[in-house]
Amino acid sequence: MPHFDIVTNVMILNSVSILSAVFQVVAQCHAKERKRFIMLPVCSIILIITGYVLFAISYLVFESSFEIKISIGLAIVGTICVSVNWWENYSTLFAVSFLKDISRDIAQSRNGACIISSLIRILVTSAVVGAYVPLSGQEWQSVKLVFETVVVALVAIQIISSALCRWFAVVACKMHALRRCFVLPMYLASVTVLAVFLVPVMVRFPEYNQTFSSLENSKPKSTDEWLRLLLNDAISTLNARDIVEHMNAGGLACLGCSALSWWLGLMLSTVYIWYLKIHRIERTQDLFVRRTYEGAFMEQSMLLNTRFEIRKKIKNLR
Image 1 (cartoon, helix red, strand yellow):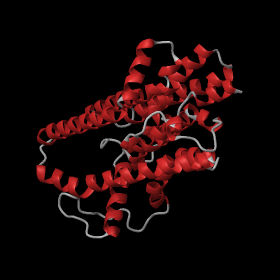
Image 2 (cartoon, rainbow, N blue to C red):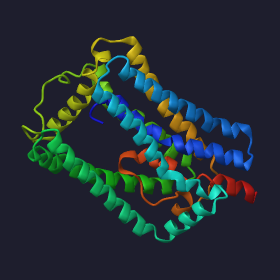
Image 3 (cartoon, rainbow, N blue to C red):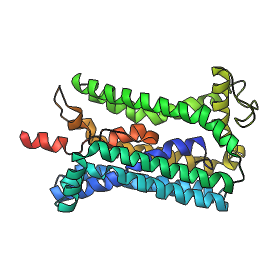
Image 4 (cartoon, rainbow, N blue to C red):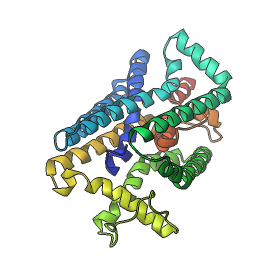
């Protein structure tokens, strides 16, 4: 979200695993598994909620405003709503005929459901942008320029990245390298992206504070200019915060701890993948619940999309 800094925007995506952790706790209790299996998702829930609290404190206590309050509420509610997206991974674990019927119907019309959901997202996004531009006093020319230069490129990159990640996940299964070639890279993805933007600040990148023209006024002509503009925009989100400008130790601690809590919460809620016993030739449909991934939550979606019951099936077969 534009009101948040780069650290918050990158790491808050990991909090979409909160409902998956809740479903795991309920499923483990229903199956009467050992307590050590239940404690991991419980700790994940606690860490994610702690991250929400520290995230709210870092903004409301140190730099509170009406827009920030609205943005914080939307961010928390939005991530919780997005976390419902992976309910299908746990629907078969509960003795609820309604959920099983829905899962069966979705499985029979998977392609149609994906197309309809994608169209609905496009329409909703277009409606939000169409309402926001005139209400915020902006001009459509700026939106058109951003769409031509940024949105199309991001969509292309996202499609290619999703396809490659899916392919590498299948290859990792065939190589029996699920941990080091799939799980570990997905865990480190958010941290790596964050490091790419923060390292120039830490090493005092010579031109990181140079003033660049916005996309509304000029269009970068080279890859180097695009890179500088991207770094400048990301760094400016941090420099605009009072806790960074005045080096407020309490605010920075809340910011860092919230990011760490969300990241650890995602790891604990998907740690079951680390112990999956899969076949050397594993079909993709047996490994993942859905065929597609959410654009803005690629690594989180791939982890949460991994079937939770695979381990249980193999365990029973033994």
